[in-house]
Image (cartoon, rainbow, N blue to C red):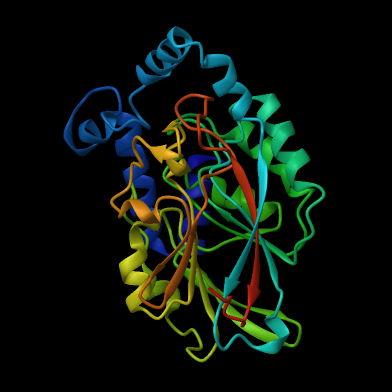
Length: 321
């Protein structure tokens, strides 16, 4: 698909304004990333874009004798079974299993792709959600990520829904939807299971592109149905809570990726309370889960923060304390 064809496709799919904003911001990011000017200059000094870190972190880990272990950790993906109590959940949705994959960075290396596929293949689930960051870098050709996503897609049960992250060019949108993945770009769908229904909404990236719009995503949604929101980053948690969202599934933080003993993150790279940086949390009536991700960013290394794929099981039963 040529640039002109992509622009036309996106304008038809997203609307002219959203398409122009996404493409324009991506172009600015590509142009300014290494020139050190404007907003992108500030973003350059964030760890995700500071490519000197790709040499500095391995050097430090090698100096401390932890480099080999940190690399092996990225391929030791654990499966987490997470039970989420949503009071008033309709009977038909009781036990609904949602496979949650986030921050795959699936073009980083062949061993990572194999580790993710091996972790996912045996998992039983009723639907799958992907919460962004499919590419390792924040710029460049996404074709390798697309090829590896196609391999992973073959392991996933229908239906599959996704949102884009701050590493993801909007050019991934037609590629993902061509695989049968429904990408929610400030949109919602009504999902039926077991004779009952729920609303699944998803927003564009809020961390870098700032184009996530909860109000637009929920426009026209049936407010009497359970409401689940997909967001790449948890940074939209307050807006989601006050919009009446019941459950938000997200990622982005990697749980810190390189943490102190006790899984204490050095940095989360998100404007959130630290308690929202990993795993299950609650803000008011909003339930949330921040995945530490299955992949790794900046460098393929993890310490005291295992990579994860998550199976959420919905229930109406509030667990006893």
